[in-house]
Image (cartoon, rainbow, N blue to C red):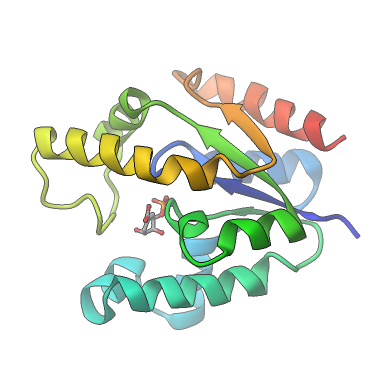
Length: 175
Ligand code: S3P
């Protein structure tokens, strides 16, 4: 059985885009954990945060992680916070090959300016607040992300074309 490939990293580093590409390249099924939660519960992640709070979301996220990560032959991209709660990162390292897509705060802020999407943790912030929040939260999360078995620098992703180099690097690491 092929262990799942699990992508972690901060919001907007490209987990979903790279994950989808990688799944195609490796002939695996792609899952995005947020989308999986939304389909399973027929609710947007932003709505779960607003109506039930973050603690409730983290509990659901943990349970759904356990459901999807043990499917066969998958690429799974997680939410930015997934590895930072409970023992999630240790569990991921046990059941899959975990890749941390590592980007600097500058790269993340640049990607964010192009797509803020519906990210409950980032909404209603001025550019200055956003910069401070991203820098501080990334520093807090780094110790969890860094427990991933593989680390991939995605600061190079300044054009769409370069995604194929990153996906190829990950595919090569798996062998
Ligand atoms: C979160 C990231 C989001 C989503 C939720 C919380 C986080 O996923 O799970 O809004 O805590 O970083 P993306 O990283 O796919 O945006």
